[in-house]
Length: 93
Image (cartoon, rainbow, N blue to C red):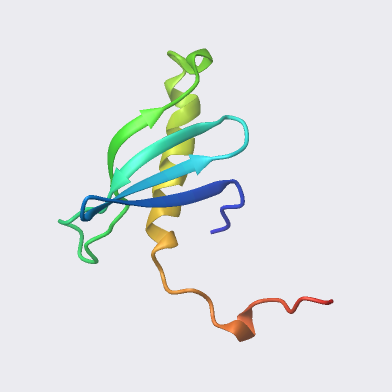
């Protein structure tokens, strides 16, 4: 799946790491997730620790539920091995 509007940020803090997924286009939101230790790969789709959404979203649960599900899928796939160089398009200079 293609996730052009998502960004994963990882911060090291006191011997542990914090993971954030940000949706950069409308509707904007950010999630703090931690890897799911119970998942077979020890990452899974992540366990949601915090969700930050604009006040204008209050009560519109259906709207951001879809984006949150996509953010969790992005989180899981962002830990996958990078694509080999042959699969990437070449850049022209």
